[in-house]
Length: 292
Image 1: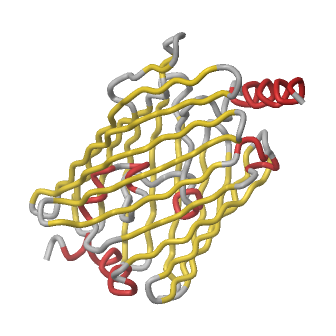
Image 2: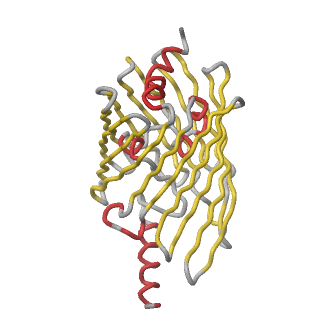
């Protein structure tokens, strides 16, 4: 049994070291809606998942929201399962957010806890900050933890265009006795909204350890109940798609992701927004209304 556990840990660590795959606290997409857009969410970030993509986006939120995400066996590999929970609470002095993400299995576990804050200046310029706690546990080996911070900005440029910027791990945090540096990622992008029912998103991403990556996504709101989305990206070459089903306070998201090396996987998430249909309509009109 002990030998089997060692083999499993070695297998997971080997998977983590594959380029374009996972590694310790790397930048992986969370939530079926952003995944459906191939992770191009920095300049959109208009739900509680902003804690993972751009905390400045929290300043856009007007209603309390809770979202849960679970990927039990990405690409058929149960040892790299991922789960996340986010919460946002709009207040008079900005919006507070919480995020919890776990990755791995009982022998190898990464945990990231986030306290987030976002606010705005005249409802057109948004800014945000994340405080992170990272914990790594490898059974029968060791455990380690550290702290870090992220920053984000978002601006409404015109009634149909907005810009976003995010730096993950701006503090350059390290973990463990080997002082392994955690992922440090820079993202910037634009969201074009030619009408209230369509979002076109373009984004550039630079992980300091990997080549420059490009991402793009399209999101179309068919009616008050159904949204469709698709995305593509480089580094690695990938294609995504997704659907949302909305009813009252609930939103159920599903996405499919095709990775050039690992194949196809799918993910789901459930969101409870206390503004319901009113909140979704506000999100679609918020950019245009900012310039009225």
